[in-house]
Length: 347
Image (tube, rainbow, N blue to C red; front, top):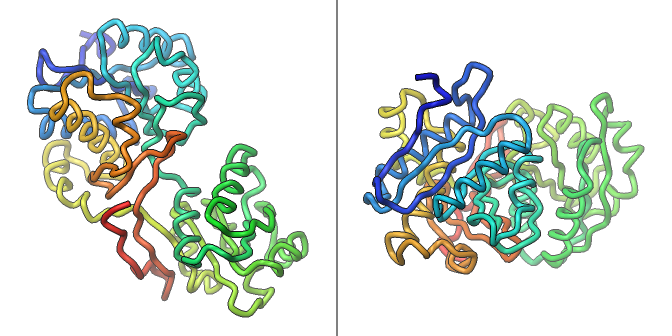
């Protein structure tokens, strides 16, 4: 049979369905993060489903039409939950479908804006990391905070970052941008008032230009000024002298070690964060269904304040569907992340 005709289904034949929507690569196979998430989900159902949950993996072809058809089909099969890892436009198209016409959505790709109470974003991004790092830099939450971001930083992320800083009790002084060709002196010249007025500077970005932005901040030589980075920073930046002492919050990877060996043995490649997200998605669904029955996957249950403990640590979903995580706090020293605080064990 051609790969497009193969039905991928795992777990109990009569179990409550969880539908996983992914996109195959050009070779007709799941590749990269999609492969890892599929494998993590398969392992999760096998270990946690107890034959009460059935995972159905569906390939979504290019374009939005295929997404709508797969969602409608899942609804027709009485699927309890849709889990997806798709491009932003496709994810947004699922979120835009009225909740009465689809199961709740657990999104494993980059966070999407939610318009209702049944879209949940499981994956952490650099904004989550930045906010947790900010809390570590100033637990009291009463500082003047400025941010430096790449030139292509989106308006939606700008709003989200601004709101998070204000909501944390700090004063947001504003946001400055840096370009790919900027040197530290250029960045300082363009953003001098923001940098000089801040007690904490947050730098976002996932390219080596982060080091240039950090150099601009340090060259201002503001006494006692703290620097906050993110889990998006490339490791090559860690060795830049200007980033020494920066706070960087990362996912709690300790629990992922509990499944890493079995994942490697089953699929012959190492566990990644994507694989851990796939496993945790099935852990959420399986835990609710096993404890409360097939109708247990509701917005209210997914938003419970106690949260969930998975291979990516302790997390919960807030009222807007964004994930909140207890993260590991690190500081940069000698070109490496050094753990300075383990995550809290409760919210």
